Length: 199
Length: 288
Image (tube, rainbow over all chains, first blue to last red; front, side):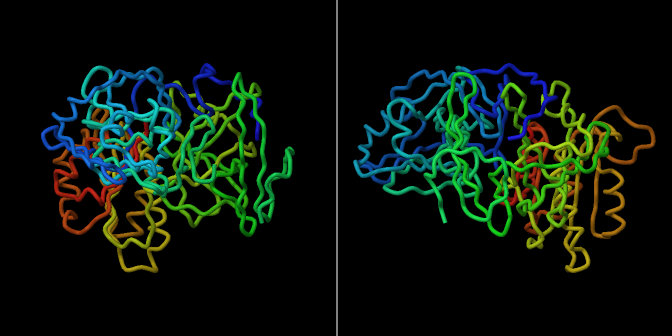
């Protein structure tokens, strides 16, 4: 690696920042195209694949599920990190329990309303590691941030937290999603700086 | 031929003809991170994930607040217009800052050109602006498999850029211009937005391009203080402007690329949808 003797950092080094990240106080928006507008009237979340009870929740039905408050740091592959972001959501543990996910399921594929998808190993969405978020900072999630509901998996780069969530599909095989097939890492651990395919 | 598990060793040279696996132990602050680094080479060519040493060979101004910086990277991997590179600065303390910069040069050119905007409280851009020819920095790429365009697409091309959002779009324009003589014509239409005349990127080059390509149309809107004698638009991009500039391309399966600050991109993308342009043909790149 190349050291720049004359580079003077302007930002504080922080143990909470994975390498290559900087802290931001606003909330940047990054998407592949125009923002989908989905009303809670039309919204449905479909859970399918290797589950005992394939399910579809309307917004009113989904609001009846037990939701938790979660505060976590988030890390975007475009280098910004935001600390102590506050969300409210239903844990994947709760959802998986209700639909009866099969023992042979190894992966979760999250599907979005704009045809985006992302893939996660099942161990990365259990034990409180993942939520379907319905509130950010005490309010409904704004459309540009993925509302009405988005996946929330803060321990991985934030492209894994699929916005405009439409479906959760449990599979017995991996299926790389949108960014994973366009040069981004299949797993995406910010603490190993797994940004791009060969990292 | 994979040679994994050959023990730990520090490697300083970077040219290899085989697939190799190097493990470096890294200590920054309290966290120890193991970095597994796989160099994947074919005919001396580097992989996009690998940090490459780039030498500054030329510097000039693309606009008042944006510098054109041209780097040489021997055996750089090929890229498509619209992609970007990550630039990394490492301080003697081990502190690392990384930022992404879109490629301004077309794939046909050997050297890599970037358009670097000086950000007031920036950490990386002031350092880059202060560089002198001959100095070296680390970067890797190309990155980004979605916001890309190449001349295999014959449909009308719509490019909408705000400020430094013009950088990846100029790569697309330059790529199109490279193939002018060898193709049946493609309609390229550009709408660029800038605060002032002095902040229009690649102003002279854009004007010259319209002379070379009679089908190329470029529209400009200035959003800052009104300029005397200015003939173009003088306001933020809105639906009326988009309809006037691009309306006739709606039914032609045009490909639209929008790049700039988030609010700019957000508003224009949704306006294009309202005008009847199809979602699948609109790609966006938001700068923060």
